Structure formats: C-alpha cells, structure tokens
Length: 422
Image 1: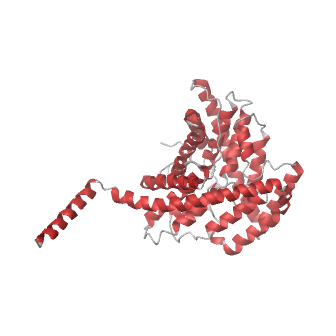
Image 2 (image 1 turned 90 degrees about the vertical axis):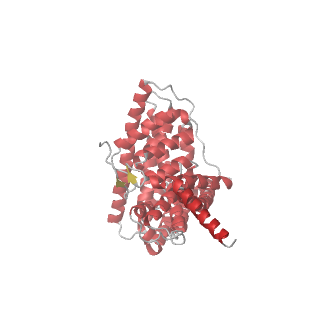
Image 3 (image 1 turned 135 degrees about the horizontal axis):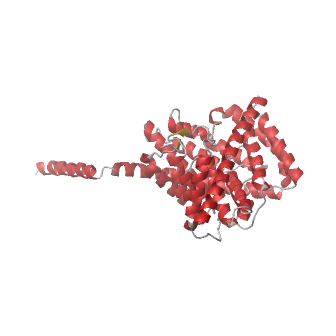
C-alpha cells in the first residue's frame, strides 16, 4: 500500500511528460495566452479611455473654434513636458521598434500618460495629428512593465512588445487581424517573426474585445460599388497604387526633412511647437475652416460618398507634417488615411474606377507605403470595407509598398529583405 502512491505519481509524471512531448506547443500557448489576456484587457481598456477622451476633445474644439488661438501655448507646454521630464521617451514609436530589435532598459511607464496627455492637448487646441502613435506607445509602455514580473528573457520581451503593438493598433481602429499583422510586420521590412504570431493575434483580438466591452464605437466606412475583377480595373488599380506610393514616399521624405529643419533652426525644443502652432493657427483662421486639423474623420467619410478636389489631400499633408515635425503629439496614421482617401476620391477624375473604391484603396495604400506594411493594410481594408474590395486593396497596397521605396515614417525600421530582390 505504501508504494502505490509513489508508483501512481511516477506514472502520472510519465504521462505528463509524454503528453507534453506529443504536444510541445502547449506550454508556449498557455504561457502566452495568460500574458495576452493581461495585455489585451489593459491595452483595450486604455484604448477605450483614449478614444472617449479624443472624441470629447474633438467635439469641444469644434464647438469652440477660438481655442485654436492657444495652440502655440499648448505646444510650448508639451515641449516643456518632454524636454525636462521625457527626453528618454521622445523617440515614441521608434523607441518601441528599437526595443524589439535590441531590448535594453524597460520602456518607462511614463510614456503612457505623457503621450496620452500630449495627444489630447494637441487635438483639443487644433493640431493635425492621429491616434495610432498614442495607442502604440501606451500599449508598449503598459506591457513592458510585466517583463520583470514574468521573468521574460530578451527574445520573450521582443514578443511582448510586438504583442503590445498589435493590441494597441487592433483596439484603436477596431481591426484586430490587421493589428496583429501590423505588429508582426512593422519593425522589419520584408520579414515576419513567426514565433510571435500566436501572442500577436491573441493580444490584438482580446484588446479589441476589451475595447468593445466599454461600448466604444469605431468609425464605419462603406464602398458602394466594386467592379468585377477584369483586366482594365486591375490595370487602373496598379496606376492608382503608383500614385499612392509616390504620395507615401513624399510624405515620409518631407516629414523627416521638415523635422530636421525644425531641430537645426530652433535649438530650444519647447519653442519648436510654438512656431508650428502659430503656423497652423494662422492657416486655420486665414482659410476659415477646421477641415484639415484633428483626425479629419468627416472628410474621410465624405471621400467615400462624393468626388473630392485634389487640394484636400495636399492641405492635410501640409497641416500634418507641420504639426508633427514641430513636436506636437499623436500619430501619422489617421492623417494618412485622410490623405489617401481624399487622394483616391480625387483620382476618380482621371482613373475610371468608382470614387468610393478608390477612396478605400487610397485609405490603406498610402498607409501601406508610408509604414511598409502591405499585408496589414490589405487585411485592414477587408475588415473595414468588406472582402469584396480585397483584391483591389491588395493590388494598391503592394504596388504602393514597392513604389514608396524606403521612405517610411518610422526611422528605426530595419530592412529584412530588399524590396523587389530575389
């Protein structure tokens, strides 16, 4: 009788070892599912709070246009905050990408409240910026705090940050599949890190679910007409993709050049957003419209419904480049959606495709070229607009990705595989 428990224990241990030899991925799945649950819940909740705050700030500004007069003052305060208390987190998204390539110090948690505050202030007072940068930085700062408690090694920390990026992107736009692939695709051009696939997808899906639990609504878009897949529509899609790629490359080159100019001409960093704020505020009141500040969601929706003029995309590009180059906070992606969608809508004047389809193609393709993430952007088109436009969106995204070269908005991206090389 005394041997029976020991014999049973040894058999149990044998069966457990056999089970895990037969299913070796189970410990990995269990571990990363637990981590993804925590990341998803926290990042999804953070995204929900940020989206609600951003909606309030946007509505309040649009009802009190005079607030834009104080954009230079707001810029000075943001500049002071980052110059004296946040120098180590100033690189923003590039710090996240650097941490994936070469993990060193834990990303400071203060990145999350600093970027949140900076972005809300930027939008409240009329800067032209997005929201993806904020979501990614909040997610990365939150998730990396668990590296030490979970005793993650260097490679596991890379997976953690990829998963955080996926969760932030997927929850802020309501596109978990695109978010997962974006996290896998964005840091290394031409390659995907397959050992992070499960954590990235799990984190993105769970974060999107958490955001939805807070009853936060995402913007919906609709493409009315998608032509039958034939030679001429495909050819027109390629031509449109070339235009989107050129636009993406121009945005990437100019924003880096203007940013360098601000740094070289204005040595004291807090003064840079003051000058940028003066330019933006003067332009708004001179033109008599707030169409090109903030996220620009109304104009994006309009681009799917009617043919827009060519100057819309150019003006949004100018407003966004000045805002972000000067040191205001936010992201580039939603402005890139605006630029791409309005450019696509305008291209319907010369490219015989439905303006709604061209707007949708531009929405994702300019983003694909500017971030070097064609797969994520193709999935985003399917999630946002429906599978019917998938082939056309894929053509535009791939062509834009190839045409844009290496002029991306993220300076710390590395090249895994050269574009067009075999």
